[in-house]
Image 1 (spheres, helix red, strand yellow):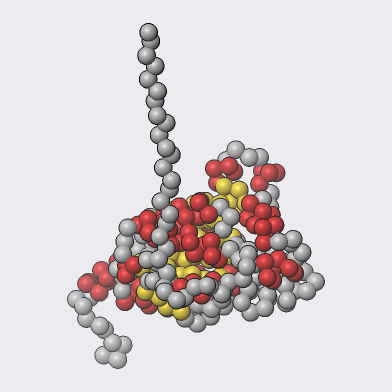
Image 2 (cartoon, one colour):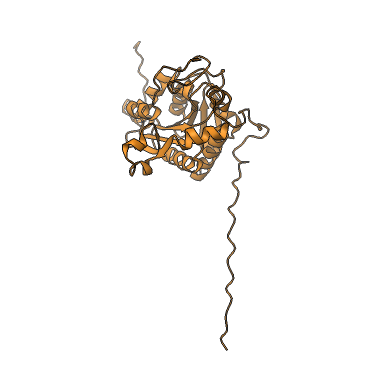
Length: 293
């Protein structure tokens, strides 16, 4: 008689939940971001990307200016610095020069980084300091009542463009690459898995890394422009309005018209600024030369 041996099916192992408690300051939650805002998703992606490096919290410093995105450092258990409107990259530059071993991450918005802070943005990219610049790009000033920003699309409504914006928008990634950033990428809050991987790669990169993070502001941009809900915004702006670089290779030009590319768009190696500065000090014999001498 044939004996049939039953094989037991292995139970599928459940993924271990990520423990955020090591990265969030006690007593700081709930956050102030509006219901439907994508900033919370971006925060989680950043924390998971940092955890993936295996480095201790004290190896990181978060710097921000002013705006909704700039509230991020207040919630996290790292070295943090909340500074002035548009000046986050100036403070981050000084911090990196003083403490070159720190991995400095700047959380900034499209207005904070590219309007009042546009000059600092250009020169940070030019110098190629080892800094990660996360631009939370929701196409509007979210904290200060919904004025249009340097990335607001033509025709869109804001408090300062009640009949539709006529200014042409900046392309954050093209601007960063042209200014000299050595890592340039784009992600969205909707594609959170992709964003987490991009952020991890940016953190591991040595040099200025800029990530344009397409995000949604339902309170102002959404209501002004008649989106039905936060989910509708994510669907139309982040999902339908973008295409991955892998998908783009197989699509005809007409299918890419009006779409933003997601993924790593530019990556190269170039001397990092603080290392070059250290060599300069060594060459000078550690002496500080005064112009008055």
